[in-house]
Length: 167
Image (spheres, rainbow, N blue to C red):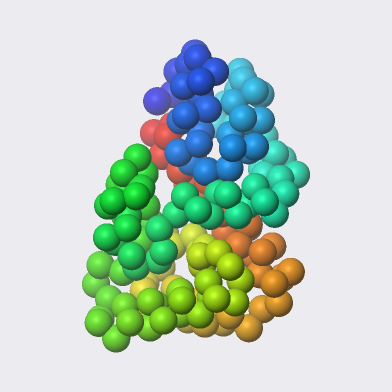
C-alpha cells in the first residue's frame, strides 16, 4: 500500500495494519492517531518518537507477537497474520544445522528463564549461527541493559515491517 492509501484507511483498519508491524497496543494506537503522514520518512520518524516514549510494558506486549527465533511451528500456528514477514525475517534458520537449532532452542529457554520474555533480535540478514551467538552474548547482560537492547531490536523489526507494509 502507499502512504496515501494508509492515510485513507479508517482508524480501526489503520490500527490493525500498524499492529501487524509492532504488537504494542499503545504504539499502534498513538501512531494511527498521527495521520495523515506526509511520507514514509515522516511515518518512520513519528514511529520512532512514539516507540522511544513507550514503556517497558509496551515492549513486553510487542515481544509476545513474535515467535521464538527458529520456532517455525509456532510461527505457522500463532502468528498467521505476520508469518510471511517473520518467516522471511528468520530465513537464516532454514539452512541451520540440527546442532545450531538445538543451541537456539536451549539458548531461548535460558534467555526466557533469565529475562521472562523471548529473545528479540532483528533477524533479517543474519544466519542462525549469528543469532545463536548474539543470544548467548546477550545472556550475560543485566535485565536493565537487556530490555533496552530488546526494545531497540523491536524498533528495527518495526521499521522493516513498516517498509513491507508500504511496499
